[in-house]
Amino acid sequence: MTFMLYVEFDATSESTAAMILQSLSKMADLVHRDHPKVYTYVFRHASKSKTKLIFTEIYGDEQVFLAHGCDAEFGKLLLKAFDTTTGKSAKELCIRDDINSPLSKTTAAILNEYLHVTYIPVQRGFLYESSTEKGQMELLIVCTGCDENVYEQLNALVSCVTCFTFQESDGNRQLIGVITKILSEEQPIKDEKPAINTMEIVCSNEESIRHFQKIINNYFQVQSVSVQTSFSGYIRHKSLL
Image (cartoon, rainbow, N blue to C red):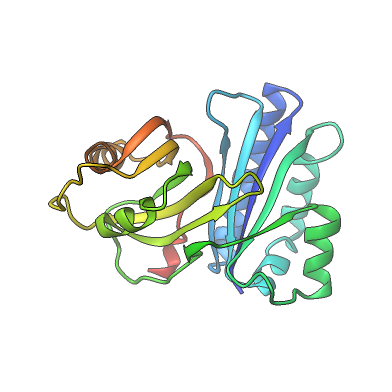
């Protein structure tokens, strides 16, 4: 029962946001060491903001979600990063491909009463598919304002371990993907390219970013692109290779 938590958090100051990301980086080290089924665990500044943070977390099942925070050192870092003085969440989404399947009482209590999530179903695609190939890159994309052809075109060009679309209550189609490989640069270019309003690219490797941006420029019509090269956590758990 894989699910994603997608959270936007407003920190009270730039220094507080920096402290939160530092704590989250240490927390991610513990999670990466002990929990390979936490597939993606990424924390970063929102574009053009020093106080707004975005968290993207993919859990393979409820058990790993409940277990990942049990380490005593993790708990200390969590309490340091989040209290009434550090800020508050602006958005908490729990995205599921099996949205009608019941959650355990413990998981539901955390998601509903502590995080106050809004449940969102996967519209098209997959939250996680295992792959043994090493791939060429580890790159996270978050797209908003996608037309209905974006998903199909993207999957013809790249290999993903995560790629799905969803809609919030405003009807805006969004896509999140974890890309590991460029499959082809020889696909025919359509006269009317699939449109994306905004795209955020998260990747620490500048060569991978340039390679992917070439694909984007050739095959999509994107109004605005932002790039994040600095973040806490990890895009893909390497022990799964």
